[in-house]
Image (cartoon, rainbow, N blue to C red):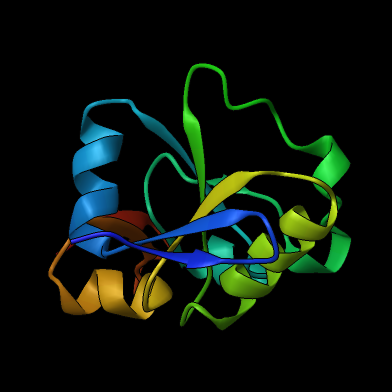
Length: 125
């Protein structure tokens, strides 16, 4: 079940991987991966957009009129920092995925990965 945190006037919605997947399936959210390009290239959630933390600027985010923005990273630490940057930039509500990509994989949810033997992108699990 989603929880919320207050980031100095900004509400941070903390979603489980299962909640994020359900919202993605309903096309209710935009999932933004804040990991490095190399991490994303090796394995990522299908449909997630890459916006690396190293070049992140909250003013370049799309609006949230039609779909909510949900951030994720490898473990949830970087995505929470990005949410804090959004709060500092004046956003009143933002979300991130608890546990990051590691929690997504542990939940057995689908993702894309490079097969080291062939170099092809394959669907997992």
